[in-house]
Image 1 (cartoon, rainbow, N blue to C red):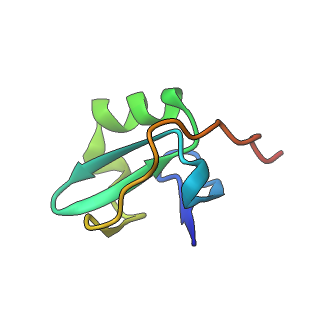
Image 2 (image 1 turned 180 degrees about the vertical axis):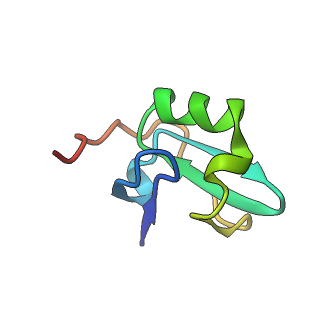
Length: 68
């Protein structure tokens, strides 16, 4: 399964998500700490790339390369 980082819009495999956050009953997954922090500062701006919160990402996943 792949997910879209709501901040940078990169598509990443769920198992490679660097972090996750629940907001409004939905789970959001991030390719980096930078994207996760940006989301936490303004979740309303990014809260449209979502999947049900029942999913979770591994906490020790590696950071994927950012697409050019």
